[in-house]
Length: 178
Image (tube, rainbow, N blue to C red; front, side, top):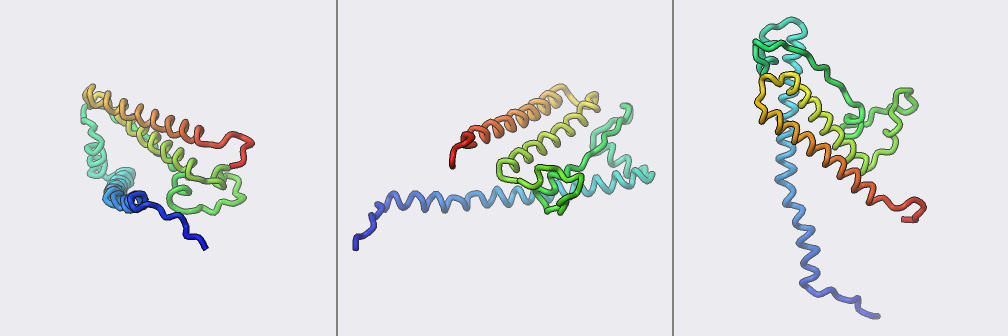
């Protein structure tokens, strides 16, 4: 019986260190959970104000107007929101739409690459809506705010393109057995 080749101690320490370093991500995950809680709370507060305003509450309408920095001397214009089925299906729960005529075809083959693309698309969508909201009310923002929001949005777009390019480069060539 032969002894397996033993790896020198310094080399064995490196994989252990790499594995242990995953715990450094814990504060990031906790911070993301906390930030998500804040966003969900803020979403519900604004949704309640929106519903109250839709049913005629002037107080709720004033709160909505002040939360989006509209000035009373600027004409108000509205924005309609949209709900994305893919975001719910991808990040929350299955919708069990099998054989439903409105089922998006991509729902049956979700993978990590698709999730990255969907997340990037969702971020760009949110950024687009926020930027549009800012542009509609541009009179109430400085040029610097408009410029930085546009730059941030362009960075999101470039990041999504980089993710797509990386995914394409990482795909095995057609016909290869990998």
